[in-house]
Each structure stands twice: as structure tokens, then as C-alpha cells.
Length: 155
Image (cartoon, rainbow, N blue to C red; front, side, top):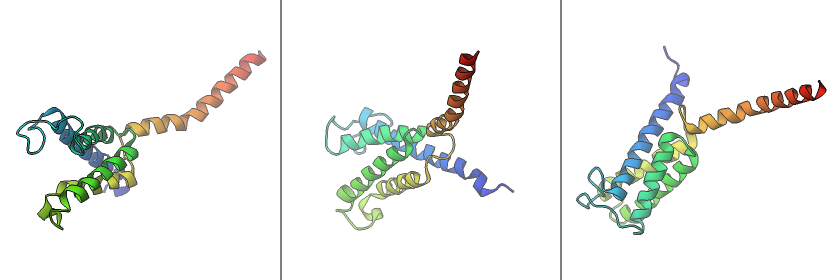
């Protein structure tokens, strides 16, 4: 039987990749009009600079791509989570109390999903992990380089 601890980083990574991809696609639809365009626009886009929709779409696109790749994951997820919490409380909450009534299910789910990514980290297969591995290996390389230089100077 496979240990859940052994597969946990991979499941977290799959969750991160799917959440990031869906979030980025939502932003791309709003900014570029692809895949049906911005919600309620019949294939259109959100006008550049429109508050808060255009800025939210930029956060969705850039934050989604960063989370998908696992680059600056915790920071991107925190900003994305906050953006969705803001959307829920300023756009949806005023319509009704429950997300099912106010149309805010997606905002609420994204806010909590990205908060989970902030807490758990990127999991496996993240660009963040490549840099962490390079930093971890660097002291050994630096020490080896210094030793080589000292030995070359002694000859």
C-alpha cells in the first residue's frame, strides 16, 4: 500500500496546478476575450483599467500562471486568495448571505483554495523547489570551489 505521506507532495502539486490553470484561464478570458470572454460580455473583454474587474483579471492571469508553475507560489497564492475574498465580500455578499444565493461560490472556493496553497506550499514539481534545491546545494559547491582555489594557490 502507498503511504499517504509519500504521495502528499504530488497531490498538493496536482491541486496547485489545476487551481492555477483554472484561475489563469479565467483571467485570460476576461482580458483577451478567449474561451467565451469575460462573464456576461458575450465574448468581450473587460475595459483596461476598469476597477475592480480589470485588476482582478490581471491578478487572476498572473497569479494563476505563477501558482500553476510553482513560482513565488505562496506570495502569488496569498494575493490571489485576498483578491477572491475581496470579490466575495464586495460584490457577492451584498446580494445575499450564502454563496449559493449570491453567486459567490467560485470566489469563496478560490479564496480558500489559494489560502490552502499558502499554508501547504507548492508541493512537488514547483519552480520554487528548483531554486530551493540550488540554494541547498550551493554551500557545498562554494566550499569545494574555495578548497580548489586554496589548493591551486598552494601549488
